[in-house]
Image (cartoon, rainbow, N blue to C red):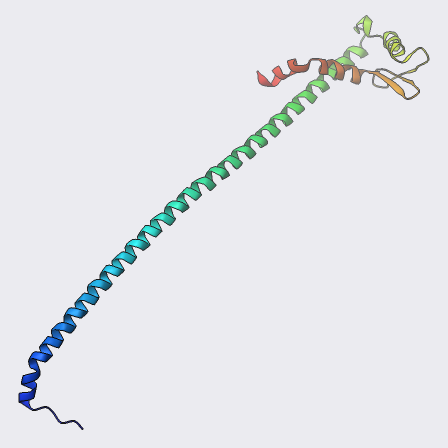
Length: 177
């Protein structure tokens, strides 16, 4: 056990004690101030880093968004073009179908133009393949001629298809008007 110090010793040590306490308080204050400065610097550095990361992420997001938008626009243009071409194809086929129906109607009536007779079609087929060509009447109207591995198609369907095909770019006015 330690003995308590006499009152005079305590009184004599009071200035030393006060100096030590004052020095410890000043050192603690300095440490706290330095810790506050370091913490403030770390917080400022973290904020700057966070702002930089956010700005980088924003720029990357804008780039990614722009690229995604370009991809979406390209796909949309491709889809629109495919639909447009599909519609044009259906219109073209409808034109061919209607034209063929009108040709068959004219073929089946006595109002058929004289230059669209079977005799004329046979003659044209033989001119193309030669006089030895075998020419037969087609069930749907017109004729088909064959000679060896060659064939001349003068059926109503083939003649109508060629006539519509010869319209070329004029047909586009159907869907561009």
